[in-house]
Structures are given as C-alpha cells and as structure tokens.
Length: 367
Image 1 (cartoon, one colour):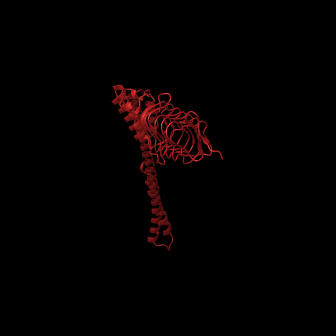
Image 2 (spheres, rainbow, N blue to C red):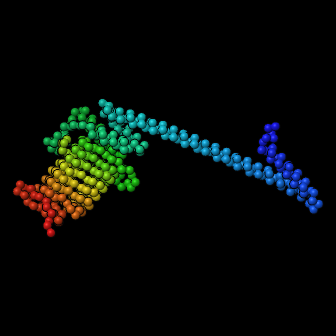
Image 3 (cartoon, rainbow, N blue to C red):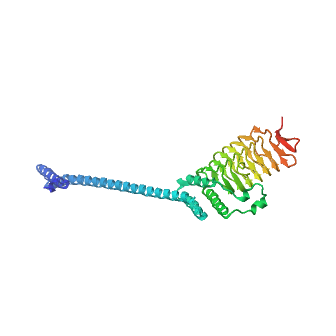
C-alpha cells in the first residue's frame, strides 16, 4: 500500500495511462499508423516522467540549499562562540596583567606591561584601554633624587636613587616606550587617533617623536632630562598647562621640531628649564604661551601659526629666536618679556622696548 502512495508510483501510473490513452485514441484514426500512435503515446507518457524528474531535481536543490544554510548558520554560531571565547580569554589576560602591575617585583611589573601591549597588538579594540592603563601607571607618584631642581645637569646625571627607585624608574621607562610603540606613525592616513592622559605624570626621557596622537593632556606634569615630540601630529587638543610647576620644573631639553598641532595647543603657565625648540612646527588651532617661562634658549624659527597666538606675560630668559614663518593677524603681546643682553631675533612686525631692569618688552610696530 505504501508503494502506491509514493510520487514515483503515481508518475509511472500516469505515464502508462497517457501512453495507452493517447495511443489508443490515435489508433482509432485510420490515417494514423500503429507506430506513430505508439510514438505519440510514448512522448505523452515521457512528458510526465520528465516533469517528475524536474520536480525531483528542484526538490533536491531546495534540500541542498537548506542544508547549506543550516551549515552556514552552524559555522556562524561556532565563529561567535570562538570569538566569545577569545574575548573572554582577552578579558582574563587584561585583568591578570592589570593585577600584576601592583606586584612588588619590578620584573613582574615589566612583564605585565608587555602583556598589556601584546594584548593591544593582537586585539586592536583594546589599544585605547591599554594606553589608558599605561598612562595611569605613569601618573602614580614617583620621586627620584636627581629630580631635585637645585641640582645642575652634571649632578643630576650622576645621582642615583635607592634600588627600589632605580627599579621603578626602569618600569616607568618601559611603560613610556610601550606607549610610543602602540601609537601609529604620524604619516599614517587612516590610523586611529588615540588619546593620552598624563596629567600630573612624572616622566623622564619622554619620546613620542614621529607618532600620531589624538588628544594629549600633560597638565601639571614633570618632564625630566629631555622630551622629544618632533614630527608628531596631534589631531585633537593638547594641554601642557602649568607643566613643570607643581611637581618640579620641566627639567631638560624640550624638542618639538616639525610637529603639527591641528587643534588647541595650550602651553599657558608651562616652565621650560632648558633649550626649547619648536622649529618649523605648525599650530593650526588656537595657541597660547601665556605666562610661560623659558629659562634657557627658545627657538621658534619657521613656526606657522594660523589661528591665534597668545604670548601675554611670557618670559624669555635666554637666546630667543621668534622669527615665525607665519603669524595670525592678531597676536597678544601684553608684557611679553626678554632679556635685553641676550640675542633676540624678532619678525619684522615686532620690536623691542627697553625697560629699566635689564629686560625688554616685545611690542608690535605701529603703522
């Protein structure tokens, strides 16, 4: 009974019925030969078989499509599970590395920093978070005997701290180096812009040269020995407000040659203790050096400022070259002071006004 319920049996039955029906009907016509009648009947029966074959092929195609769709969904589910597993492992690695940053042994802290950097390289979505953690580590309080502002450069170079201070210094230098390694090159066109918050940080030999940075916060920071930001491209706001004031002076050379500041550049109240070099740097946004102190030579040769420039109450105590390449229409120069006995070079639109205490004030030429 089950055989007669199958589509194949009904197709065969329909084919035989058509064969006999069409063939028998044609045989009643005297003009039709027996062979033609059988041939026509066979074609009619074969058409039924062909239709069944087409239906069967379409059914197989739909079954195969459903199978492939189920297989694709299974692969997607497996991929999602694998991604969730990788994310879970990454989260565990991140949490473990952060926990180890508080370990007493310096080599363990260095290993934790490298683990965080490795995580950022393998999982780019962690990069900003890892940079935040590295910056947070550098914001931790840190003291070293050679950061004493009363020492001269030779004395600072030969001053060593306790073993714990020396070990911590190496950990911090590692953190600074890893931050630079994680930042994209300055000329990378489609690179992400990562922000750095080093507010109040104590750093030494800070070097981000040739890197692309989103926003940079160095408010109230102490930058010892030397700082190199040459060739950097800053995509967002940069604040050095009062750097070098609360936690000791900004000790060391400050090099920022050929950098590009695309937004705000705030150096208000910053203390520069040694050579400051901004040669050929571009400031495309509002720029201020209000109340800044330059204890040594200052170079602004070829600097381009296209938005606004505030030099109110800025003091230049060393050799000073302010021959800007481009100046905005309005520059704030209220009580901008230089030492009269030093070599001071100015753009053609400015002049010096001698004061009685050995200082000179920069003023704009009239007419």
